[in-house]
Every structure is written in structure tokens, then in C-alpha cells.
Length: 232
Image (tube, rainbow, N blue to C red):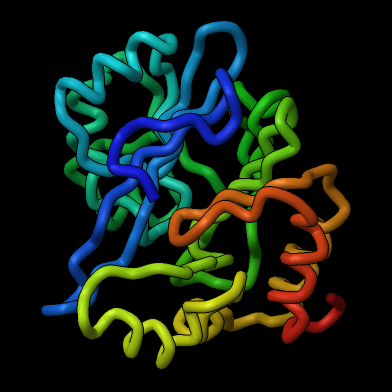
């Protein structure tokens, strides 16, 4: 995962990598996405820290009009992004207005959310995990499914304890739904129906917050990872 702004899909989706220090010797790779909406409009999905140089590169691509915190766990770096782009609309997971009241979040994702960019970047809420309340997104122009914690694809990790930690949590070596994420699912039937709905969408590539991009055969990969859920 790159720590510079790099394209995933030319002129459509870019990534910026970051490492989260979870414990001494344990580092979790994470990524922010810059996603083209309509025209020159851009969305920053799951913001991570970045400096003025990266901001200038983002600004050269278009105008940041949207910030997205896609689940209740991905919010640590939302405030700096909001301060850097005060003109942007922030769309947050349903639990974040109460969790981060100081941010004054007014636009929330969740079941039935009507977002102005849905024709290009369609939100699909994943039911059944009240701790996460994740919204998946389908970037229609590139047939790219964007997931946050509902899929991991860790292959190479830094830190002497990272391989052990991620093996214990079932998060490494293949595209998987980790044991930690599975433990947040309180209604397996609802989550199974949500994943089944995703599988009916037209996508080929999967990009997630943690791990390597799945460049092709996305539906088959997701179906295999979610096979523990009913109805998949």
C-alpha cells in the first residue's frame, strides 16, 4: 500500500496509504480513497492524515465536495479533513453524530440515506452489525465495490508481532471477513441478506480499507469470504 497518492483506476480512484499502530509491534495498513464523482467533484472516503503536499495533489485532481466516514469505527482523522475542506459535505455513519458530537455531523448514512452523489457512488447499507453500521459503496463508472471492514486482504504487514496478531484474528493471507468483524455481526440473517444484495450489483474490483485491492472476480471473492453467512 502506497503512502503517496497513487491511482487505482486512472483519473477515477486514487489511494493514500497509512499505518495504524494498534499495539507495540503491530501495525494495521489502512487506506483513504479519493473518488471522482461527477465532473471535477471528488469524495474523500475514510480520511487518513495527509500533509499540504498531498492536499495540493488532491486539489490538482478536482474539488473535494464530499467527505465520507463509512462506518462507526473509521472516524479518527475526520476532523482534520473537515477543517482542511470546510466547503465539503460530510456524510457519516449513523452512530458518529452521538460518538463525535463536537464535529456537528448532520448528514448521516444508513438505511434509506439519500446522498446527492448516488448515481456515481451508490451507498449500500450493511444491516446486522450495530457496532459497525458500515455502508458499502459502488462506484458505478469503474465497477468498483468499496468496503471498509467487511473484507480484509492483508498480505504483507509491518511489525514483528503483526503476522501473529492478524493470524489470530483471521485477517491475513486471503480476502476474508475477519473474526473481529464477524464478532460485531449480531444478526447473521440481516447481514447475509445485505451481502446477497451486494452480490447482485455490477462490480468487478473490490477496494477495502485494509489490505490489497482485489482487481478482478470480485463477486466470487466476496461470496467465498461471506460463505459463513446464511443465504450466501
